[in-house]
Amino acid sequence: MKTQVQQGNNGNTLICALCTIVIISLIGANVLVNCTRHYNITAKQLKAWKEALYAAEAGGDAGFDEVRKALNPSSLPFTTDGWTVAPWPAPTPGPAWTKTISSLGQAGSLSTTVTIDKLTDNTGAIPATTPYYRIRSVGTARLFGLPRVGLSDQFFAGGLHFVANSASRGVGDTLLRKIDFKYDHFKGTYGDGDGNNIGLSPVTYPQITRRIELVAVPKYYVFGGALRVVNAFDGPGTAGFVDSYNSKNPTNPNPSSPQIVSNDIPGPNTTSYYGSNPSNSTFLADAHDGDVSVATKNFIEGGPIWGDVTTNGGNVTHSGYQISGTIDNNIPFTIPPLSAPDTTGFTSISSGTGTITAIGTGDSSPTGFVCSGISGSVTITNGNAASTTFPYAYAKVVVNGHVTGKITVKRGVTAEIWFTGNMNVKGEDLDNQNVDRGTQIPNLGSAGVPPSIPATPADDPNPSRVGHMKFFGISPTAPSATQTIQIDSPGNVFATFYAPSADVTLTGNVDVFSAIVSRSFSGNGNTAFHYDKALNQVQIGVVTDYQVASYVEDVR
Image 1: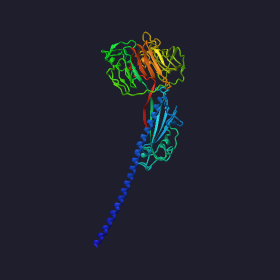
Image 2: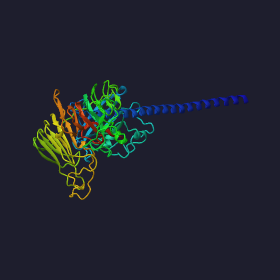
Image 3: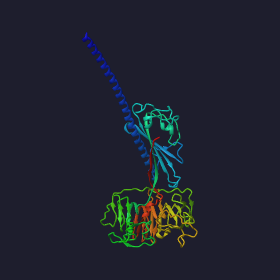
Image 4: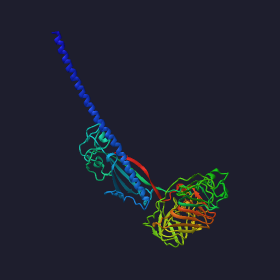
């Protein structure tokens, strides 16, 4: 009997053990299934979360590339290649453009929608005629797998309606990763991002979206060297030279009466207005930045160059040349054509002769004038000379023709002269009466301040005399058309020239205190060229590129 009882107990124990194993296995299998499911869900969501940002950034790059096309008038932006006008309302003053790029990434699961808003600055920091752009990009990644979240299965904490429950759009990963299973949560709460067109927008597939916003602002050209030439350089004259000075440095000589000193460049010509002065190291340091850049291999040197030289494919070396700085023959660059400015609201003036009065208060708000040519004598006077706080004036003259006459810019005036034709003048015809350094108050009395101005006005923000007379050669629209700028002796020149489609020629013994951007440059005789280093801090009003001033992800 005892043996039978023991056998019965053993059977019960075995059954209990088997049941325990089954239960534990079921629990383990359930845990494994849940872990695998959540792992797969989380992995897929994490992958889509990252890829959505990649798609958004790709769209931002596409929008930024389109903005940069605005510099080239032959490739107008936002009108081709799939771009369309965005539906109203667009941000004031608008307009806006949009484009969708689909079937990106693995299995075509990514897409991006880009919207570009054209805006204008109301602070005066950017001229009203120069737009800046807001680029908004939405990157979308299709979400594969079960329509669930990794940390919570509760899709909407406040209900199924985003518009009615915008304060609680979800919990867990739903909120963290902006997962849209049935509706676009962003459009349901914020519309286009500015609060327009709020409403439910169904999604075709479960998806994850991420949004970025870029602000592209214009990048203005500043002269970073003496000469920047697109096609060919031949200069200076065999008896001339290229060097530099700094009008902000009071130790430099007055350019109106330069002194000749010995330089340290080997060669037959060993003199320079701003060369090596053994008794003044600062003076010497400012002399070595007469840089020359050529976008081709076409480089011919006559006299010495105090500065660096770059070409694109040239064979320039120090051997046989008189170049004080470094040489690099592998520097390509391009300069876009210069378009004509908008002359809406400009005052029409006589093209032959006359006096015009500038009352503009800044580079972004000059007094505008337009004429058909300058063949006589035009004088630009300062209408703000009596101001006790800012006695300076700014003018912008657009010449729809040639410049062959005399232009006088009175003291305290910053003048821009834009022209569509050719320029053929003598150095003395470009009469810039401003001065370097210090307060440039017009009509200074013997005591230094006019009696009518009791208070000391602010200093001129532009320290360079050269920077007060700026010439802009508007590029010809016809492919075969050419533009020329020729300056002959006598007389020295204090002005800048930005004419990317013009052939510039200097002849005689003209001394040019300047910086030049042109198609080609030729200087013969004993023409000397002096670059003012202070110009690298003076914007000349030409947009050469756009740059991203702000990048932010919209995490709403």
